[in-house]
Length: 259
Image: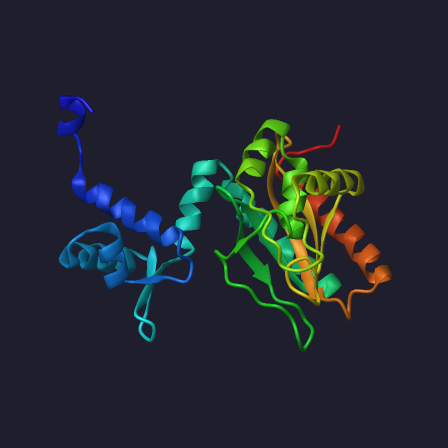
């Protein structure tokens, strides 16, 4: 770093970003003491930063656990940076309509640095339905939305994500090799939708389809999650067709038209 760069450094801003980046890797939140120790900052500095971010709405503080965690306000900045400002307002009404049609919990998520990120959901109409917290990550090798997005990525970008994938095994149904995963992505590309067949959580099935922007790039995925007892083979076929229709409608609203 040359002298000019040193002169224009803003140390408190660098510390602020370090706190946010640290919390982005700990979705359950962390205590002031943990942040202080991990980042090697003074307690006073960390407290002031956390208090400021909380007051501005970028962090939330849990009185019971004494933990700080990121809020969805950070996602707003991310979407603006991606140029996908229309994405949320386009997807969410369709998400609720899809939920009303299939009755299962419907979700919308995007690709993060190495995992997927749940952005929002419309909880199912059944007495028992799944509920997830916005900001929760999902793995790409065993989740329906992860497969749907990966199957639509340009090969050179897909390869970058494949290099980071650990293929963690959750049960005997989990895909654990690159070769098997690539074959799965071929099937997804051919079918137009992806499935999680109890590959992470026993008894839970998910069906997903990718959403594409005006350039054809997969900017996210919509999916449903439900217990296998409610999702028979016939129901899966019907729901998959409906999800694909909604993904197409949303994609067209974003300027994408299949050629």
